[in-house]
Image (cartoon, rainbow, N blue to C red; front, side):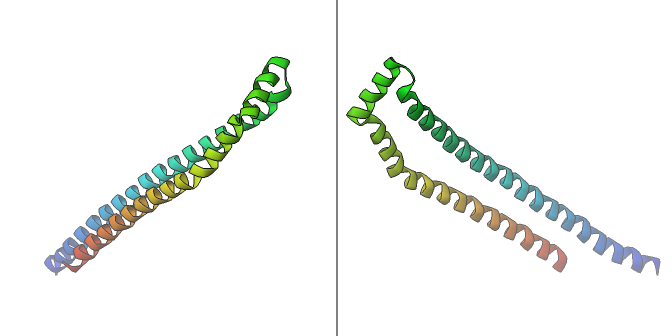
Length: 127
């Protein structure tokens, strides 16, 4: 009777340990990619906030002193500030599309890796 119990525990115990390792690896993989995606989102938000701060600084700079007001009036007269806003407006959809593409490829690789881990767990349980 003891040999049967030892054999059953050996089979189930090894499967539980291997499955635990597979689940731990899958969870660590998800956490690592979530950190990377969070960093990407934080970086995009940081650059967006810095752009807004810069543009509010430029708008507020127009009437502070006579020299800076003259410089800002000159830049506005030649259309530099409008051109800067137009270029940002033109290229922001391309930047957004590129970021969405990268996030989609990262999420696809995450889902493929998780699928592989679950497949390995299934193979372990079938043995």
